[in-house]
Amino acid sequence: MTHFSPDNTTDGGTSPPRLLAGISFLTPAELPDWSVGPRGDRTAIYAALKAAGYEAIQTLEPQAAIEAGLIPTGMMRIFDDIDQMRTQATKWRDAGCDCSTVQLGTGLEDNAEMRRLAEALLTISAELDHPIYLETHRATMTQDIRRTLDLIADLPELRFNGDFGHWYIGHELTYGDMEMKFDAMRPVFERTRFMHLRVSSNAFGQITASDPAEARHLDYYRRIWTASFAGFLRDAKPGDYFAVHPELLPARAFYPKMVRGPDGEWREESDRWTESAFLIDVARQCFAEAEAALCAA
Image (cartoon, rainbow, N blue to C red; front, side, top):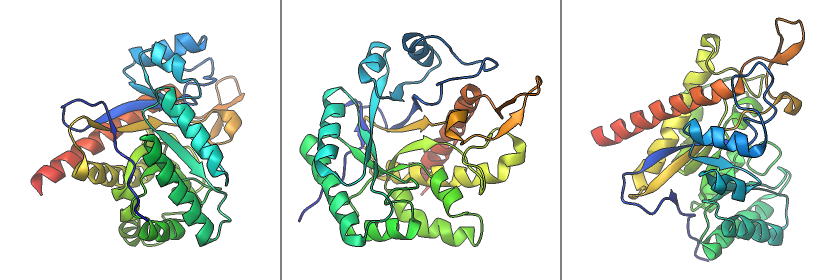
């Protein structure tokens, strides 16, 4: 059976391939009173995102994004129902989303079931002419690096949403030979076409990336992001873009570190609004490094 890779996201123009700054709808959700980020209703928050320079948002409300001048991106959580994946992908395509990312499976699939789901993803993406990127995520069939690499060997046409914090914490990635692990993961980086930006440690799912004390972890993410951008740039065409979406979750998701604030109450360690801007800046630096390396090669 012939398979086709999901397309890169594109604006249909003639400009050189570029990085696009997006954001997850979760990042500005429920910002605490001390955050410098926007508050108000959805319309006010989406307008603030546009004013802050974001171009896209991964959201369950694509029409609201379009009305705010933002590009909407779809998202799916599919366990094993292929018809459900087709229905949801059709919904997001028809709503004007540039692509969709999918958390697929449970992590308990055998190899045959993983292939069935992955083949369905490729088929639906091609039939709908809508890019669908398989997300690296715990509690899904991509939670294990080795099995994901084996899946790529079987279906090299797959393209990914790199939510690499799940592997970093789930595999305690720095426990062992990092150079060997980077080399092993290269087939995933080469096929990554979308990313959720979040920095984790071996113990916390979401750390303050701008904190100099976390520089060791951030440096590893810089390498991952730069390698992923290089993979995109090698086959990108004019008009193509690589969207990065900081996905920083609120306290109720139990991802961020919690510390006591000046009032003695527990609160998130850092401001998700300013951290999101920091992560975008880091991603831009990594993209520029990938471009420079490609030009020098």
